[in-house]
Picture 1 (tube, rainbow, N blue to C red):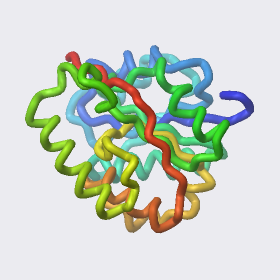
Picture 2 (tube, helix red, strand yellow):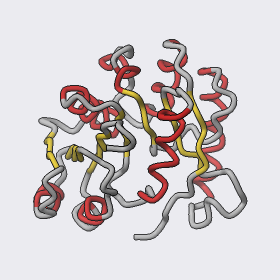
Picture 3 (spheres, rainbow, N blue to C red):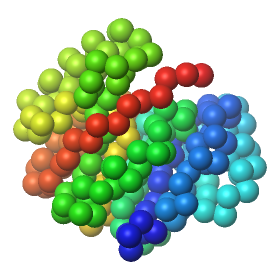
Picture 4 (cartoon, rainbow, N blue to C red):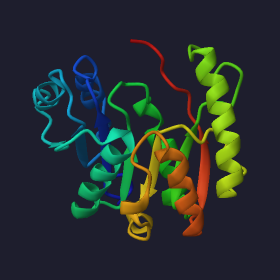
Length: 209
């Protein structure tokens, strides 16, 4: 637990055999449940996740390839069923630094926010290593999403490192949220309609293998 809050981490994974073990082995002790959701990988992602031996790990397998949004939504449903208070998203490619997990949780625990989202663009050096075309694309999509959702203070709308209270998840129509790569944008729009309080949290991304 994190200060009496039960935390589940959902790990969407597609062909992440090389790094899924790293994601699990570096997961902080404050995490109560790790839900790895495999989106019909063609490699040994599932086997690598199970080989971690971490008793907190549950592996779900999508019956068909759903895309990143559908995979996350399936993980959310498992977190809801497990009775956790907060569901966090950490991708299976080890690009989300687990050391910053408390920074993502604190706005929910201390300040009453419903949703916290990482922001990689808080300084000139924070997105070092990100390809230029991704920087430009993220800025453009973020601007459009800010217009659509009304969350003008959320700069990095494409960032998938997030934490949400499960009581807020229960208010969202999960079946109507986009299941593909538009998931992050559509999620913010639905949060806006639910009048959720959303916090921007400066967190650098990790770009490597």
